[in-house]
Amino acid sequence: MSTTRRFAPTGRLPLLHHLRQTLAIVLLFCAGLGPALAAESLMIAVGAGYKRSIGELAAAFERRSGIRLEPLFGNMGQVLAQAGQSDRVALVLGDQAFLEEAGQVAFSRYLPVGRGRLVLAWPNGKRLAEPADLAAPGFARIALPDPRHAVYGKAASQFLARSALAPRLQGRLLTVATVPQVSAYLTSGEVDAGFVNLTEALALSGRIGGYRELDPGLYDPIRIVAGVIRGRENRPGVAELAAFLETSEARAALARHGL
Image 1 (tube, one colour):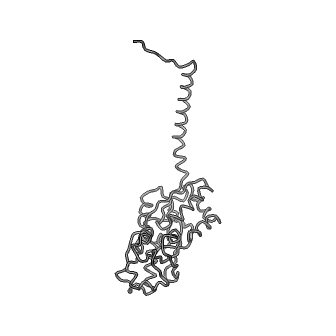
Image 2 (cartoon, rainbow, N blue to C red):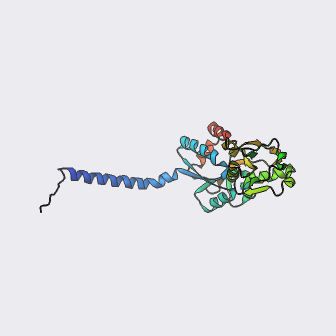
């Protein structure tokens, strides 16, 4: 039996060799570029209640600066712990008073982001004319974020105490970890009302029965800031983010999300 051998046309082997060399050079270039590309990102730990607003802000920031903003979400206890454990996190976004009191992470400065607003929301099929209506028999389960780790849980507790509603609602309050968890209960109809922030309530439009913004005089002011972690002030992107937050584009994006 004869064996047929195929030979590359004249000049093909040098061409293949050249292509292999070119590919190797490109791969080496990309490998060297990897750390540089990774440096063009900025990690920020964010309270879970700001997921949607930070998404729009991050996209606008990247378009303007070319730097990718990488948010890390969770309740404030979680994000502060992660910020302390990982030196990749340069900033933490949340309530300034909470960040100052936490003590887990030291901050060198605070970049103003907006003002947090507490609202009372209800699911489809319910209706609240006034917060006092929570005492009615039809509101047996009322959700709020954990006051120990979530600023809007703390604000809800202050509101209930200062409005004298707290004693009337004993046994009806359901504490969950985060604002998004309150939202999940509201949209599924598993609770009769819930405390969230205006940012979250706006995002739930069409999926809940409605919401009412609560008297800001009945809870401590919520100043939302991006705290720059001490020792990480010179990370690539920190100065650019500080400048971006002062622009009308950033302020408009945040205002659309209730900040």
